[in-house]
Each structure stands twice: as C-alpha cells, then as structure tokens.
Image 1: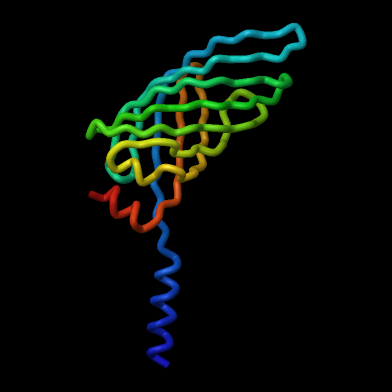
Image 2 (image 1 turned 90 degrees about the vertical axis):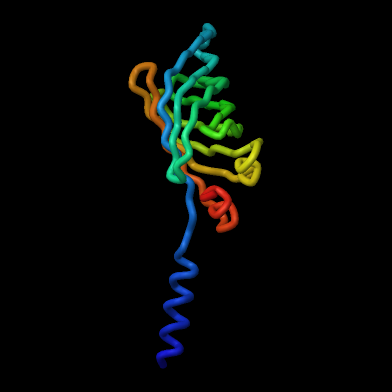
Length: 155
C-alpha cells in the first residue's frame, strides 16, 4: 500500500509540473490611419517599449504592423516585433488577434525567429492580452514551455 501511495504521489507531482514563460511589456504606440468612404479603416501600427519576464530576462522591443477595421466594431491586428535582451540576443514574434473594439484584446503570439537561447523557442505559440491607456500600452504574454527549454532559459 505504501509503495502504491509513493508511486501515486510521484505521478501526480510529475504530471502537474508545467513550465511557462511570462512576459510583461510596456510601450508607446503610434498609429497612422486611412478611412474609406464605407467607414472601413486601415491603420499602420508602430510601437516601442521595454519588457521583463519571469526568468530574469529584460530588454527593449519595437513593432510594426497593421490593424484593419472591417466594420466599426471589428478589428484584425497583425504585428511583428523585434526584441533585444540584456545579452544582446534577439527574437521576433508575430502577434495576431481579431477582436471587438479598440480598447485592446487577446490573441496568439508565435516565436518566428531567434538568436542564442531564443532559437529554441521558434514555433512556440503563446497567448497575449493588451490594454491601452491613450497611446500607452500594457501587455502580458504566457507561453507553455518544455522542460528542456525551461532549463535552457535558466542558464
């Protein structure tokens, strides 16, 4: 019976361990828009800011992209960002979201390229949420990691 309990506790603890990278970002936003007579709008999106994560990494980033307003309340966002960390290593993330309204929203972020330790994250998909206060933005991103990537980021 004791052996069964030990094995059960081990299995529960083994399968309940998950690894995440959590990134917080703050940025300043610049928008340039063109509106059509039918009220559809196309907006060039640019931002730059700073970030930190739960592995002790930090750095700066800049982004370029577009926002398409198909109706007055529906937006589709497509943005690519280049991040530079404190070790001068870089990674690029593609952000995509479709949402109602212009107060921010949630979407999918995908690591598409990286140097150094960030190469191992290529292809990882994350969730992100963004809120705006005027032209200032606040964002949080969460990505599930394998144990191998978790150990690499701890170095």
